[in-house]
Structures are given as C-alpha cells and as structure tokens.
Length: 232
Image 1 (cartoon, rainbow, N blue to C red):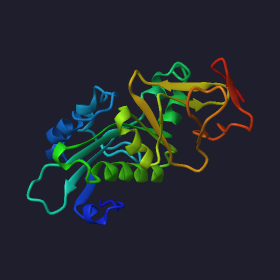
Image 2 (cartoon, one colour; image 1 turned 90 degrees about the vertical axis):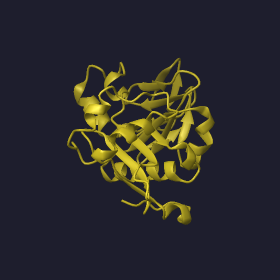
Image 3 (tube, rainbow, N blue to C red; image 1 turned 90 degrees about the horizontal axis):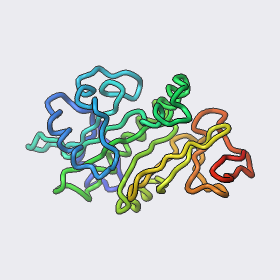
Image 4 (cartoon, one colour; image 1 turned 45 degrees about the vertical axis):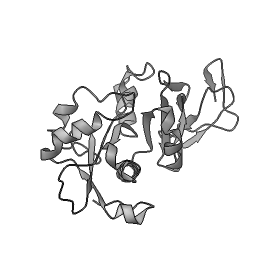
C-alpha cells in the first residue's frame, strides 16, 4: 500500500506494505537500528510467524510494516516498523489486576516499539511514511492514541508529525493518573487519533495529560493535580 507524503518526488519512490516472510531477517536487522529505549517484545520473532489477530494486526497482535523503494533492483526493505499493544496496558500498577481494563486499553492505544531506516536512506521521508501509514491504519481500526519512546534529539522530528513529547506523560483515568515515565534521557511521544482525545497541560502535572482515551475518561474544566493525585 503506497502512502502519500508531503514530498511527492520522494514519496513516489517508496511503498509501505505489511512484512513478508522472505524479509524477516532484514526486518529484524533494521529494527536493531532503532534509537528507541523500548526494546522489542521478547516474543517478536515468534509473532512474525503468526496469522493476524484483530483489525489492525498483520502478524499475531502486532503491526509489522516495511518500506521499499519502488521498482528497485534491490529487493531488501529500506525501513521497518513494529507496533503492538503498549506494555503499560498490562503492567502498570493501576491496571495490572483488571484484565478487562487492560484489554480495552490494548485496543485503544498503540505503542510503536520501533521504527528504523537504513542509514544511507535517512532524511528521505521513509520514517514519516511508515508512521503515517501506521496512524491511518490505527485510526481506521478504532485506536485513539499512538505513542512511542524516543531519544531527545528526535523531538523536533516527532513534533513536526504532530506528536507531543515529554519525559513524563500521564493518562487520565476517572479517579487517577497513570504516569508513563521513561529513564533519562528518553522521552514519551503521544498523538491523538480521535477527536475525543485531548492532550493538554494541567496545573500541578509534571507533563502533558491525555484525557478521553476511553469513553467517559474526559476531564472537567478545573481538573488539576495535587501531590501527584488527580483532582477532577
């Protein structure tokens, strides 16, 4: 599936498509170049052999995309992206003992674990194309938020794509705030995919706050944080 990007001359030479079996080794090698602090899930290699589960997935429960130069004599992919349910949807203390809530979060927020481009083809719009395709697929499948972890030197890049980045991002729940904090120097980036999702600063919060991730998780005017607690 081709992706339209802001640079037509470059976009015309790049195709974004689901990973194919002959590309598994090259795909994993590319993902090894990612600058994200979040490592791929340990079962990634096994996931690549699975049939898709869910409207977004291409392999198991994951979305695995490759970028390839159109009509190239070199068959190897130039870029790779791996996305799946965020680990915090299952592991965060606020949801760890609530399987039904974990399930809902895993179908609402998408974590991009890794996106990488071969070094000699960077700064040509390939990473942008992979991310744009991922967001379009996620939005169509009903996801409300994309998120990823990145090095600080990529902050400007992700902000140009509409992401909001910070050392800590908080997911507003009805009576609590789910803090997503990365070890220094890494940052969390989030992007709303649904009009009900708001990302804003609240008094007392240590970073951006995401509300509306699930229906009913909106925040009233005057919501704030006091001593790390959400007052809504």
